[in-house]
Picture: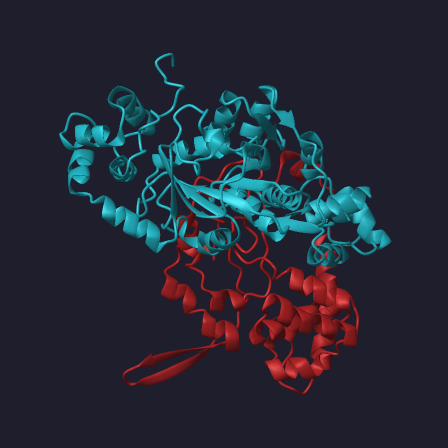
Length: 210
Length: 373
């Protein structure tokens, strides 16, 4: 969903339930119908209406209240259900041209398939086949997380106000990172990487206290 | 420019009780600039005479005339007393000496908190409202260094650089003074309430406007002359072209006070004012150490927070991060995988050594120090 902030708020909020439990319930006067709705949400939005907030070379011309209004279209509870949030900056010419070629998609695909195979094996007989599908308690039981990594995650709850849902989601992302690295146990680095992908709250890092 | 009086207000302008009350009413008018009032005062001598002129419609805007007719000085005095503000009119011993000699001085100041410092004990730190994280960090450190060295940090209580400088001074155990562009009892910006409360408690609030005066944009450039006029020196951290920081620095130069500027990248719009000032002869400073040295001040007793050791991979990453860098670019420079590099950056971020800015990472001041130390 490109220009995610331009969608009507109730439409965007409507994604909360399927993002959480993979189903949509449509209720009408005559009864309600449930549909399966497992999907991967990929969404993009500008940092502010003019698009230049945080850009080192261009000046954002948006008044504060407009930036706030723009960002408030994405509610906290909705963003809490997004596992990976990244700032994607405008690249400089040097960054565009000077980059060595990225990893080949075929190699990535192989790694993803191996990680998926590990997950299917781990969850055989449970009715789940990948990390994302696990309800919180199952995810916590199956995590195989190192004690030091667990302490780090607990610390994030205390220090960064990670919600209960956020905790489970970071845990599942960390589990996936460990699976991609071919590791049975979630190590501290996997948790840190998962936390890094969540650290981007729109506006959380922008300056200006008063 | 030649017609501009340098003599300030007539000695008797607000001396009698009646004139002081008239000066309070004049401080509530929005349609008359300090300069036009000053010119009237030069002709007429007292605040009462100037007020009479405005009430009769011979001077000031029509709105001023109508407002001045109905405004009761008792209301203003009551509002001042209610918020704990004292009056420091021109000619009184409470009026800051260093403002007597600047062009267009305020006729009256409302003051809450500590008495304003002498000129030699005050340094202004000003800059952009929409500052960068690095700019805010620098302003905070400069405020902290000045505060802990016993200097009052003067600014305008706006968000961004102003707020960071005030907070730094208070965090360093020092004191700070905010010059407001609205009534002294008006909370502006709204989000700045906590800061204003802290300043009221441990520092000084100053305004030339009557309590209750709303934050009208035209009053904000004028308060910069008070910021510059109170201080021996003015420091500009970041500022876009045509902004208030340029006005403050111009006033400081005009008043013969020292001007310091922290440079930034030539490509950044927020470097416009500091770089222009440096070209115009302001002293370039790289941070609080340079400033303290130039001002001949000893650093106070607040050492910088300790870092603990750096692991070899952390040191290598910090040394590479000389400019905002994409994580994948840093990874390829380090010859490391992207996931490990993201973890490494996150660990450094949690320790306050790097920060993420719109998807790139850059060192904080502490991180830059750690890399070079």
